[in-house]
Length: 169
Image (cartoon, rainbow, N blue to C red; front, side, top):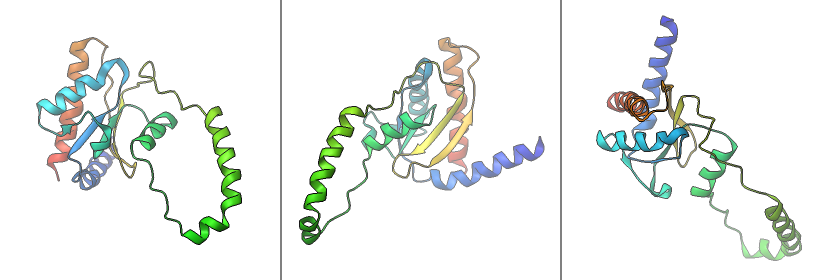
C-alpha cells in the first residue's frame, strides 16, 4: 500500500511539469451533470479558466476516454494538412479523383461515434491536453450518490486534488 501511494505521488509530481502550460480548460459533458459542478469548482477556486469554446482550451476535462472522445477532440483541433507542391498535384490528379469518390462514399456510411453522458461514468476523471491528446492528469473519485450535494462534494475533491498538483509546479 505504501509503495502504491509513493508511486501515485511520484506520477503526480511528474504530471505537474506537463500541467504548467495549462491555463484554460473546456469541460466535456459528464455523467449526471458532473461537468457543471466541476466547472463551477474550477471557476470558484480560480484553479483554471473554464472556456465555453473548446477551440480556445489548452486542455479538456472529461470522465471517459475512447473512440467517441477521440472523435470529438479531433474535430476540435483537426490536424493540419501537409503542404503539397504544384507538380505533385498534377501527377496525382487521377488518384485524387478516385480518392474523392471513395471519401464521399465513406462519409455517407461513416457515422460519428456516439458520445453519451449517461451510464458509463465510473468515477475516473481525466485532464487531457487538447493538442497532443496526452492525458496530463487523472484521478478516481466515485460520488456517493447522484444527488446535488454529493456531486458538489465530489467535484470539490477533484478540483482540490488538481489544485494540489498545480501548486506543486
